[in-house]
Length: 50
View 1: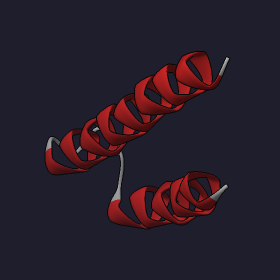
View 2: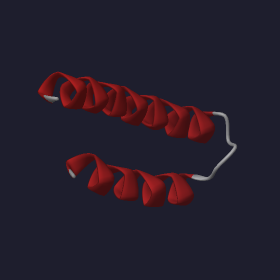
View 3: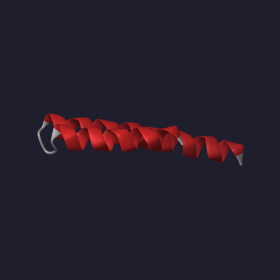
View 4: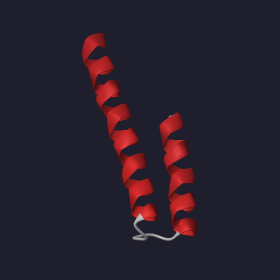
């Protein structure tokens, strides 16, 4: 059971980092503006702390 939880958490963390990369890329390619990026990044940071 603990091994499954650890695996799940590792996958979730990897997905979180992938989301961060996608947000940065979207901002760098001007798909989203900087204000929207920072708003999403703040929300992402809160979720990452959970």
